[in-house]
Every structure is written in C-alpha cells, then in structure tokens.
Image 1 (cartoon, rainbow, N blue to C red):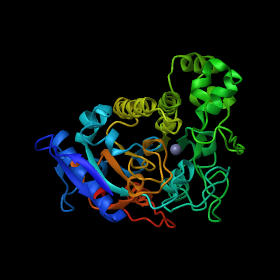
Image 2 (tube, rainbow, N blue to C red; image 1 turned 120 degrees about the horizontal axis):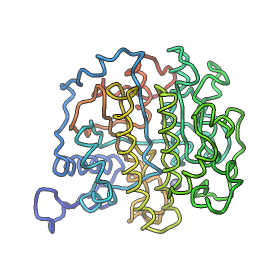
Image 3 (cartoon, helix red, strand yellow; image 1 turned 90 degrees about the vertical axis):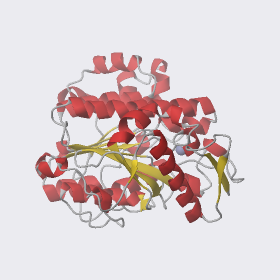
Image 4 (spheres, rainbow, N blue to C red; image 1 turned 45 degrees about the vertical axis):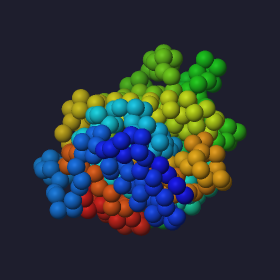
Length: 399
Ligand SMILES: [Zn+2]
C-alpha cells in the first residue's frame, strides 16, 4: 500500500511518499503524518508522558465533573480532514479546538466496522459483536451503567442523543450485573420529528434513517424517549420543535438542537452525542460527503461553545471527539474509496481522538497507539468509577 502526503515543512511539490506493507506500519505512518501536519498547521507540540495535565479537573469535585463525548460522524478520511488538502474542511477543529486539545493521532478500531456496533463498542470499551442491523443491546455493560450504578446517579444524569433509530438500544446492555433502566436514556431526534410531523415530506431531508440500508426499520425498545415527554423534560413544545426543525439542513443539526435543550434543562453529567451526516458518503456523492465533514466540524465547535456558555458545564467539563472509524482507501481494490467502509483496511481502522476542557493539557499531540476501546476506562478513571468488564486500558496521558 502506498500513501502520499505532502510535507508541511518543505516544497509542496515534493511529496513524502509513504509506503507500508502491514496494517501496523500503515497506522504508524498515518499517525506520524497527522502529528506532523498538526504541529505545522495548528502549532501543537509533541506530547510526552512525563507532562502532567492541568489542575482544573482535579480542582473540580468528582461529583461536579462532566463528560461530553461526540462521535465524529460515520468516518472521514485524512485526505478530507487532517492532510494539507483536507484541512480547509475542518477549520473549526484546526483553529479553535485542536490548539486547546490533547490529540491522539493513532487510535485503532479492531472491531466490526458498522456504525451501531462500533459506537456500542466505544460505549462499552469492548469490541461488541452484536448484529449491526438489529434492535439489540450491547452485550457488555455500557459506560452509562457503570457511571450510574457506581456513582449512584439518577437516570437524568446520563443521556445519549443518537442519529438513527437503529441506536435505540445503545443506552444499556443486557449484562446480568445490570438491569433494565440502569443505563442512559436515549433520544432519537428523527423518531421524535417523525412522530411530530407524521413523517411529512417537508421534513424528508431530516428523517432519512440510514445511509446504508434505507429499508431497515428497527423495532424501538420500551425505554425510548417519547414525544409526549419532550415538553415535560426538555421544556420544548412540539410546535416549537417542528418550527425550528423546518429551518435545519441536516439530521445532525437536529441532534445538536436537542442536545442544547438537554444541557440547559437537565445538565447531564455524562452526555453522548453521535453525529452521522458524514455517512451520506455511501450515496457516492463526494460533495455531500465533504459538506457532511464541514457541518460536523462546525457543530462540534458549536457544542464546545455551548459548554463554555452554560454555567453548569463551564470549567468542569471534558469534551472528547472521535470518529467511530474511518473509510476505505482509494487504492484498495476491494473497495470504492471514500464511499464505503467495507474493506477493513488500515485506513478505515486508524482514527484519532481529541480531548479538551477541564484537566486536559492544551496543544499536544501523542502518536503512541491507543484503541477505541480505551475511551471508556479513561472516562471511568476521570470520573471515579471502574469499567470492570472493559477490555481497554485507561490512557495515561490524560490521567
Ligand atoms: Zn457507513
């Protein structure tokens, strides 16, 4: 496999030609490429395990700490994001968020590359094997269940806002140590909008549920957040919801609207937001894929700004942003480039993660390998609980 990156330091016409034969080499070269681009373009420094995080999180009592996780929508490749030719698509990450972040440039996903199962794996810290297109809960306990049980938090303190009705079971597992109602409440904005508008064609661009299997209609579980709870819990009338939605251009914008309401009304300490617009790439239109990346970049910064403006969150929140996985390389004969994530190649498995906010060192990049399943044990260490069944490891650079 051969990948080409232009040097951020030298002649743009003299590419650094990276060639690698093993997935591990590809992952390392991608990570080094990202690191060098970020050092050059965003001015971040190379991290060292000897550096310690800032004092802010430690100064916040554990009971007041908050975590927000954003999954960066259904996979975007380096060519369209961190490589020099892609950076124009992520101006908010590059200029606003990365300079304030600790950035991990080599995050490997060794699991199944389907969005529901991969997001469930992120949320449990184990590589889940549940059917990606079935209404099934994760098999291992989720971070929401550990958090609520061990810290004795109420249901109002852990929420997921998810892009697709197929994510309706992600809030809690079927693990025997936990029971129904012990995890996160899940809000499915498309489901709510569909119920509010009776599936009106006027809202069709916000209601498409899956970019891969348009015919899949998941069965919704008993814990799904229903439209008639919106006024009571989110203080949002159905009419206001419909009126606002009319002006939105994508499902992720609808999710962010709901998230803002949730933060303002309930201020959950553990909040998980899954973006999905980028996955429109499956339709094969490069321009829509790029538009999805640009929107996800903007919405990520918008949520960061909400964190800064809400008194319940400002100064005591750590934000994590990471993709569930990547997309296929152009030169893999088994795939069709950016369109899908079918080959399981190193490019689609090697992603990144950034952490910013309370307790996080600003402007450093680490290219040591970590895995997507390391997120949950890291959150556990930061918040003071234990992810007992996770197969991942806490990321020491963040602790
Ligand atoms: Zn996809």
